[in-house]
Length: 281
Ligand SMILES: N[C@@H](CCC[C@H](N)C(=O)O)C(=O)O
Image (tube, rainbow, N blue to C red):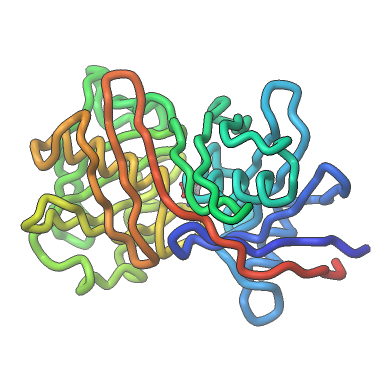
């Protein structure tokens, strides 16, 4: 069986996209494990399926590189917007909706020469006492709570953007972290029964944020959209940034701009098509 795919990235967070309007992808969990592998597969952080929806312009499902399904993907949703616009699937509209396991999201697309360049996504409200992260027995948000990994105490602020994030602000340069060693220890920490995405963040002198991320199910990725939103929210909760102002997050693969308001979190950033192909599965 052959499947047509498009490789796309948002700030270096790269997935293999399948148009399921005109083909069926069997067993996406195993396919994601197989194709994300860079030596025997295509290579990537996972796969994303774009399907018809009765609630929105399209439905998006995201599978991490280990085959687990995520509820939302901030970098992926911008790429889905680009896929739909660039392939004439939006009737030329630049305001579109995408149905995810974390609800329907609205995207405002910026277009140049007939192609989508970037998107502003209404990511919905941040959940400050996430159900998936039962670290606070009182139902209040945990700001700068201690967590011990490898006998070292870190301070975390937990925020869900549909998927769970543990944000750690630190003074030491995040570039010096041995993420491959400590990332899995956060992901599988007993405090997080559903595992967690972990963001390590420096507050820079100009107020912008530098972030590295260890994603549950995919390991270190060069960017995480929901993680950048959670980091922007956590920065406001910790007094490092302000609500209703743009917060720039520098990631390994590019920058995202986050704005946290009383109602929602906005994320703005680019999306890029890398190549198209066909694979025998
Ligand atoms: N890279 C994504 C998030 C993907 C899902 C995540 N690993 C999870 O399982 O929660 C993003 O850009 O938001």
